[in-house]
Length: 116
Length: 112
Image: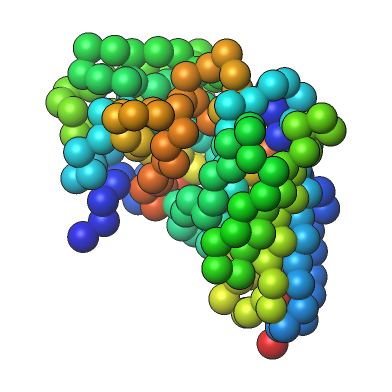
């Protein structure tokens, strides 16, 4: 089983709809992240959370919200989807421990979201 | 904004050849990391090099870091068709926490 699981893997929806993307992890990591990937632009950070009570905005948080329901679960919501939010979305986790800033991130396989 | 920029954007080589990708960044870093992404999949961490390190090896991978030039390179020796993927550098800045800022990636094609 994957350590970082994203659901759904693919989603097509219409402009104005509310969408939730879910991420769950079995790695026991405290830190979780949401990124979006657009062709030719690499990955950009949307939101991140260092523990259950901690939520931080990333580079491109406008139009998105998140919820950290438990240590293992971190969901991303688009309250009213628009076409330019069509992208590939990734969830990632990393450990805390000593040297937390030097820990690698572990990614899920992504959610391909298309907004018509 | 992108912190890292990879060069070249695309690279095509034959199996057995070496592949070199470069990354430049703008601000002081805590560490620099390289990731691989196979088509349709998530990113996989390859190697992390700290700001006080100059070179690091992992199997067929060799990473160098030159903080005076704000640049890093990833060398894959004796490439295989299975190395075909996109490669990204990502940085943790000195002033940041563990958040990564990614470059746009280099697409590597290794032909049999």
